[in-house]
Amino acid sequence: MFQLLPIAALSLSLATIVKGHGFVHEVVVNGKSYPGYAPFTDPYASPAVQRIVRKVTDDGPVTDIHDASLACNVAGDKPAALVADAPAGSKVTFNWQNWPADHLGPVSTYMASCNGDCTKFSDPSSAKWFKIDAAGYDSSKKQWASAKLIADGASWTSTIPASLAAGQYLIRHEIVALHSTGQPQFYPACAQVKVTGSGNAKATDTVAIPGLYDNVKFPDIWADGFNKFTAPGPAVFASSGSDQQTAPASSAAPAEPSSTKSASPSSSAAASPSAKPPASATAALPASAPIASSTLVSAAPATSGRCRRSKRHVRHASRHH
Image (cartoon, rainbow, N blue to C red; front, side, top):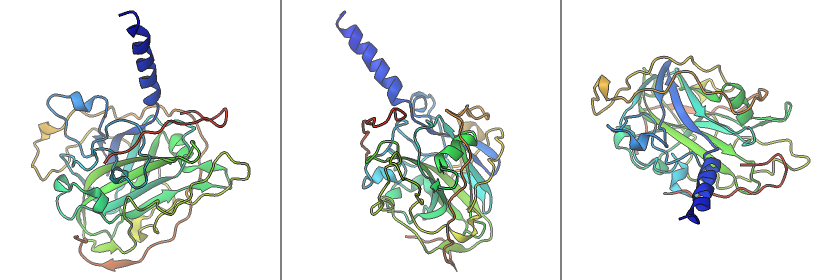
């Protein structure tokens, strides 16, 4: 019995270390706050919680660029129960629960049509993803997009393209952490939204996920002489207005998302507090990398795993998990 105590203590210590990453704890859509999926509490809630954000199993990364879970994280192939209304041209803010200051890297947001009902769309790895914003490394300020996210209160604001055709979409927000040289870590989160409006445009410049990073060479960010990295992927959808980041929308009381299952107002779980948690560190603001616009065509919306957790090595005193 006494021999088991050190093992239990070690397990608790390791669990504390593993939980030192981050996940999206709140999404603010058009000024309305929706709690994100909380991987350490939501699985045990009774009755089961209903979210617009797809399930994540923990706060760890996806490390295999060919894994289907790269699309919407581990368990992200399972649809969320609800869909949030998002007028075309509106803002969507992703608020993170913890983000380590040393997990430096690019930030991006993509969207993809669910080809109908998002609550029944179970294969995000087959979707056609288009970019609505992305930022990499600002060489003039020597700062990463992840540092901007931290400085903005661990949040990132994106804009739904104003001309986007109405319909239900996944919106995929991601930080890529490059602190562990040779092993990039991907932290995607997917929310379900119903875009409304009179737009009829779709992006022609799309990408598969996995597939987005197949030919990308991620840099050693600690190397002497490193000074440039542009976020990979296609050009930004033209009407997203996201060539620079905007201030996050203020959090409001949690709103009831629309649902194709006609969920009653009481079906949503209690919201997270609207105040954002303190950022894990302070950082100066980097500017987003400029990105060209993609070509648009008028049309109706197009119809159409599991990750490895890696141990991190330390090559520099400033590098830790």
